[in-house]
Image (cartoon, rainbow, N blue to C red; front, side, top):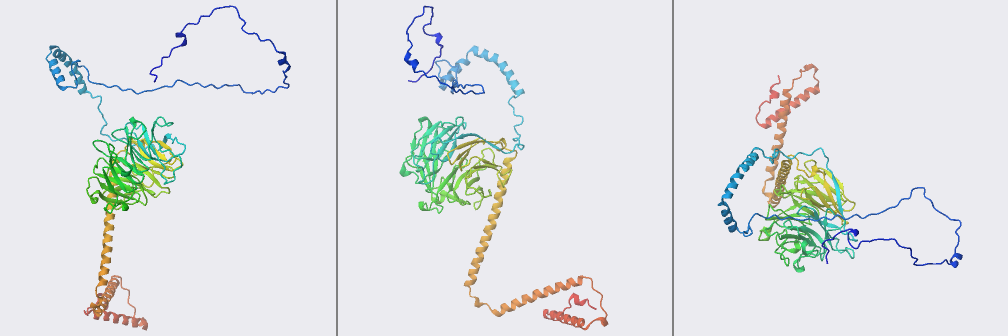
Length: 616
């Protein structure tokens, strides 16, 4: 039986009244003294007594009455209709309106109210109290405040055996709740007796979870349905897909069958943009991406094998780690693999070649995070190994921007939903990095040490002010960033777009240059092979020698002529007297004249060079 209401009333206000009166004393019991007890009395001498110099104080506790709150809603419906008229029936309301409009009192009331209404309308036309005078102005740029972040709350795993927080999801309505998935991802190293429960936390109450989710296997991922906030989609460690309805309690509402589920843990789940709001994707390291409808989780709607050879062979498939789906691009979805390759897929493809469109390769390890920019969907962010990279769909061979290689491994990342140039990354050393590539590109704008253990997951609230980070020991930390990091800056969209376009154009030029160099090298290699295949004895050896000699002498004579012209341009020195010339100088001049004459004779012209023609 449940207590509906408790009436509180003073004791003096109910029951029989107590009336007191005077009367003679009565002896109820008389105990005489016992001499034997007096004989057993022992006097204590000396007596030790402790005395404190400070004043004696007492401590009292008072439990105040708990303040209980409840939420009540009011449903406003259309009123003013007679009891015999149903306002939901269109014909009845039209019939009643026509009846009222024919009444004379109605016409008189309208005429009287018309002047008052006209006066109010003229006032509204004269002064618009809701007018936005500075609507066209951009947001004020926040430059005075340095980037900062502070811890708001900490949600700790209530279990004795701590488990890593592997995934975080914000409540879609109001973002006042946080769903956290807990799972130990070390294969066959889970401690004995480890719980498989996951929790939904209320941001105002970090001491106890609001709802406990009880799956058959630990949850690796957990996502709220953006269209129905009561429904959650989860990927289990044993490969199953589970669905919860919080209105029905903590137990699983729908669960996929083992034989049609994944063979490895489900590392990625994502809701699709559909009319029913019940379609979703799941990805696993078994190399499969599956379509599901939560109304029928017995088997998947469709399965895509991540085989980049486009043969749909499961043994050659790449393990899927992360998923990305953008509602503005309903036919496309992207998959991040544990081999460091991003695969772009087409939902409407019929054949394996049509389903897998293209690949982007650039990481040395698993891609733990994959997300499109909310303002520019052609650009997307990937996080893996020791770097975070920004890609463009127009440049497939390499990323257009990337961070430096960090000392610690990167585990997750996400774009800011309100600023196109800001993204967040988490690392194994417990650090949260906030990047703003408009402000600084080489280093993060803010690096914050959240905890001593590794951070595994990250999720940003829709307004961009709050960030939830899950750690290795199951601690979920709620952080609030400064206004400068969650407020759109002046001309930031144009600046970010210009940076993306500039870097994409630069990568295209480099790709074209590398492609040209590869083609040249390929052509040279083919040419060398052709020369080796040709028969070299066909050429005449004497003709080759003669041709080489002619080219050699032409080069020498051209160089001599150039030097002679330069000598003529210089000022001539005064001639020495014949008597003063030594025999060695005369012999040197004769030898030089003979060499010049021989050179001109071999050229066949017999012409005098400009230098020689100028001698007396």
